[in-house]
Length: 112
Length: 114
Image (cartoon, rainbow over the protein chains, first blue to last red):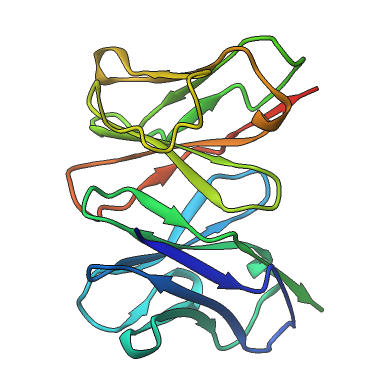
């Protein structure tokens, strides 16, 4: 069975600081990994996905994530946080049937 | 192009009542998924339709939950009778084709069972 674990249910950073949201996965087959973001009162929006091509994946809004097989990790980063990045972020892994398994989410707060 | 829509956005019912949630996927998307998020916990997979057929319903909690997708278009998720632990946000998503394609999510239905 596939699963993901997100370390830290809440992360707070200052505007302009580095954003690092952690995700570790467990998978018996090569994983396909995703990061989604949910802004208040909206649905989940895809930030980026890893599908076995380049290990460093660039997404929207300046976010990127690096797939590290040796560490079973897929951490999300952004060099400089913006107030508009405040949201909840979900890491997910997909199986062959495209059935998604999500982490518990990390709520990002950005302080002025 | 319209995204995934869900109705209602909020529902408050009493224990023992019935509630039906509706999801309209993006036109042309054969895959339709239901997920649920109980407060503060992970988003959990409930089931997956391919057109009108249930591809995987391994996440359905119990037989009080019934999902249908008549004609392979919109889907309904009925909870009957509702229990307190059914409270949460129910998300619907749709995707095109097969294998690792992006799932597009609706805004969710927040269900509160009192």
